[in-house]
Image (cartoon, rainbow, N blue to C red; front, top):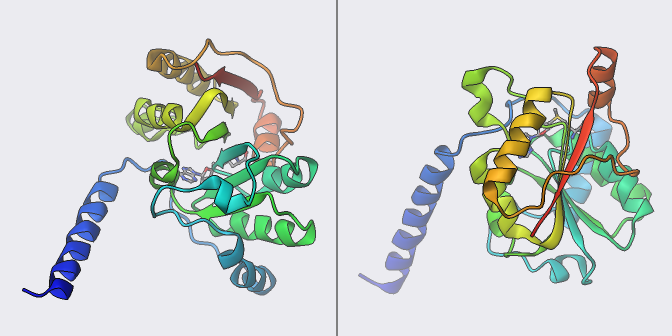
Length: 238
Ligand SMILES: C[S@@+](CC[C@H](N)C(=O)[O-])C[C@H]1O[C@@H](n2cnc3c(N)ncnc32)[C@H](O)[C@@H]1O
């Protein structure tokens, strides 16, 4: 068998194996399809290649991605992108990677990158459970999980983002002294997260305080209007 054929077989086997392992992922989001509208579609199509990081691929060299050695934060589940759009311009010496599975927020952030001339913000349209594998050990300064999907029913709780396997991967990619942040208005979510992170044994004890830069999102406002109080927690990587 010649070299090209062997390579093709190798690539196919890798793709099949990758597909299998991803099919086995316990997904943490609800699939949704909403159209962007003509203006946002144009912005998305024009800017996505320039400012996106692919969900799949080899280990990221973040200094190369951003063109500097500044600290890098990861926002998991950026939703409509409100936080990324406000954080980027106010913290130009911090790099931010914002990920969501849904396109609308990604498009909003791309619009913000252009209108505010941001060079410190990148987007990923995809699943963070896949993306996390691309970060080198101890390469991130902060990981943010703000108002993750609550998955309240007991049989759904295995879909929560802050579960043991994901916390293990987050602890791998955080630098010593780095920070994992959670905001949620579901008491059961934060109490169980405190237990999951404590069991991981790579973090200091949970501390409770809201970062001043965490803007209120539509999601948070809706919870407050329905009588739920948000709580902010952070853990420092040992
Ligand atoms: C309830 S929303 C909150 C959005 C935003 N953080 C806020 O505070 O308004 C949770 C978001 O997390 C995203 N999400 C859930 N699991 C994800 C995953 N595995 N990878 C990327 N995004 C995910 C969902 O698509 C959704 O947009």
